[in-house]
Image (cartoon, rainbow, N blue to C red; front, side, top):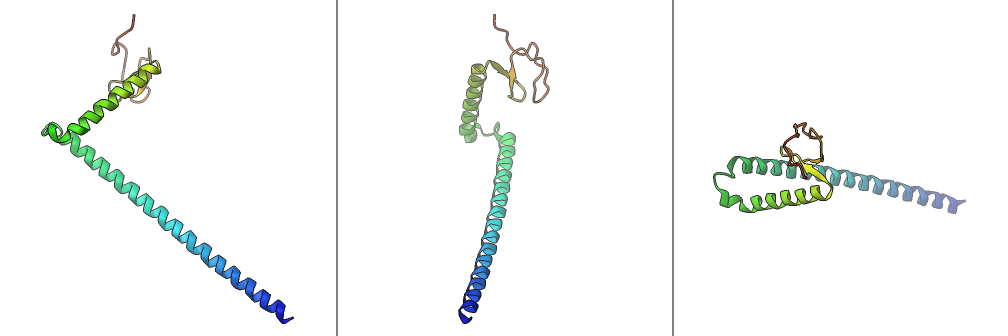
Length: 120
């Protein structure tokens, strides 16, 4: 009967070890998740601050922002090209893709009639 007691003790000990390891892993995963959330928040705050700074100062020192201006222009060109391939227009106010012939922008509500050139 002694062997069964030792096996039982070994199984219970292994079960506690597995349970402790699972708790440790769960705690690690939770901390990693919280770190990721804080990093994402911090990166978003940096982006917003940088955008605000750019918006307030890009006209004062255009040479400092030349790369950003060039990237924005290239992005606008790509969006326009995509819009044309999809057979739509871009809202001049918010840049959203708007079906041709729309009277209003689906995103910002800007009135569009007569804003786009008509194709003959």
